[in-house]
Image: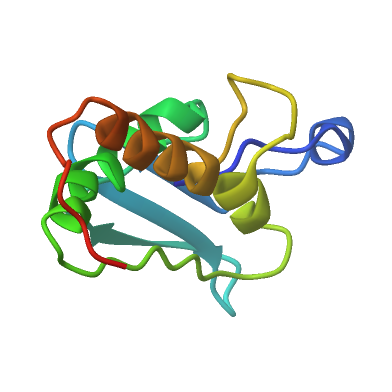
Length: 126
């Protein structure tokens, strides 16, 4: 997931260093070489979410498919990695009090509790 540009970055005319294609599932990183030329590197992924992806999009693509597996007894881990300021905390925790901006962890907890409330999982061990 690429984060959106901040207001400060927009005001100062910062050019994004990376762009995402959700259709091609790739991220293109552009950098200047020593000679002043621009070099582009393309990286392919299983899933790519652009800067306009919602928290719901991220949850649907990542953790939602794992909920039934967790309820079947398998372990799952959600791991956010990246440079400072790239949106890890926002993605994982979201904004408290905002349904639309809830992060992955509150969404995953709610999905597990909702599934348990449906009665399919009446026998459990802690």
